[in-house]
Length: 273
Image (cartoon, rainbow, N blue to C red; front, top):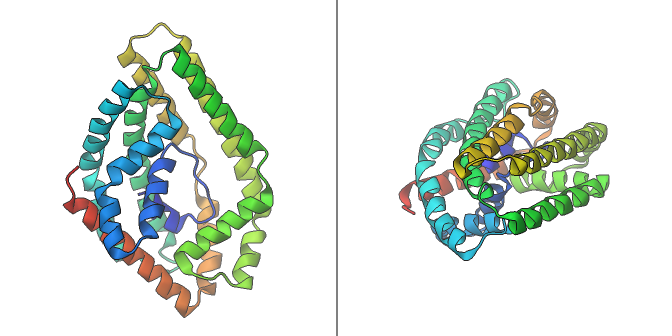
């Protein structure tokens, strides 16, 4: 589902633990038809792998995670059903961007919060050794973001554009580069918000709480993180500049990608995990 929001939010790297599902969706999108079905069928394994890359779990915890990931994937199917007709009716029309963006974003936020419940369940019981490893991992990610290059961020945005529209034109590349200051401001906000969230994580670990209460505290930290995310008005503004510049071939690529996403969601609905 993150990939669906990304269709309308090409210029905003939304920082979220939902990055795991984003990686899975991009992997599936770049696969052939038969491979897409296989990838969807194995979405549980892909998602487990991404979670385990972020959380230092013991073998018993990983076994439980496997069950919970399957349950999570089965329970999120109503979102796919809700998204399919929206994607089907999607148009590259500046007069419809606001409505479509807002609707897909609202679906994404709901899904992100549901995923946060799953993550909170596994962050809460980490022992002191695991907590330290988790803390070091978060610090390393933040350091990597802190020293990342502005040009690399612009390049990633251009790559994201091309993943949905095909080869970018000079005019479109110019529009993106004109947003450099905005992109850098968002990057600073992203890093600051991450650090604040991680600070709350460490504070929660210091509290004398039951595992259930601790999970609730972590979920509330995630929820507040989502609620405090800046509005996407600037993204909509940029999209309205880009849409009129799209060529016929770029619109065809976009249509192919949205059809791919619909196929993936239909495969997902047919799959029981």
